[in-house]
Image (cartoon, rainbow, N blue to C red):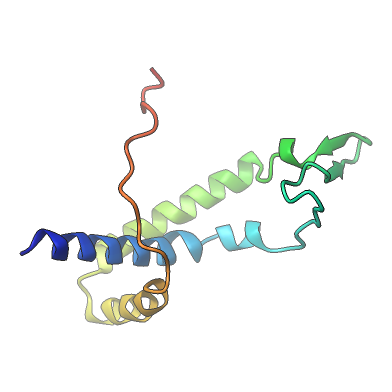
Length: 121
C-alpha cells in the first residue's frame, strides 16, 4: 500500500473514532447549555458568580468538575473499547460507515509530537 493511502486511511479512521467515541459521548452534556456573551472575544469580560458570592473570571473557572471528568473518561474508554471489539461485526461496520460520512467533513488531522511524560517526569 502506498504511504499516502496509509495516511488517508489513518486520518479517516481517526476522525470517525473521534466522532463516535469522543464527540458523541458525555462530552455533549458538558457542551450543552448557554454560552456566555463576550465582547472582548477572549471571555476576559465574563465572570461567574458562585453560591458563596465569589466573582470568578470565566478564564479561571473550571468548566468540568472531577465527577464529570471521571464520567466522561469512563464513557470515552467504553466507547473506544466497544469500537475496537465490535469493528469487525457487519452491523457495527454499517454504523461506522454512517458516522464516517459525517466525520469526512471535518478538517484533516495533523501528526503531533507527544506533549507530556505519562510518568510525570
